[in-house]
Length: 118
Image (cartoon, rainbow, N blue to C red; front, top):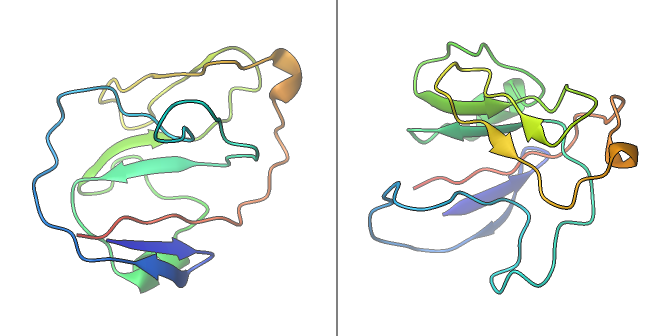
């Protein structure tokens, strides 16, 4: 597994196993669910295949919602509400917990890229 921040490798570790879609996919929660994410998201994507570091860096702010192997794509462009539409059309609507209307910003810069590579 590898984590890239702004296109630069930040951490890595060896891992084996299979990822199975048999539960809730959560982002920005600690392992014990006691802490949330203190920051901002501009976009979040889930791919069914590993991407090269150069591909991620070149497309960190936007990709086509019809990209090959793109399973889910949340643009966070709604500006209001507690759900985020999946731009791919695969129906992976995101539900936002503890979200207030004042938490929304439509001017979040596209700077952070996190990447899981297996």
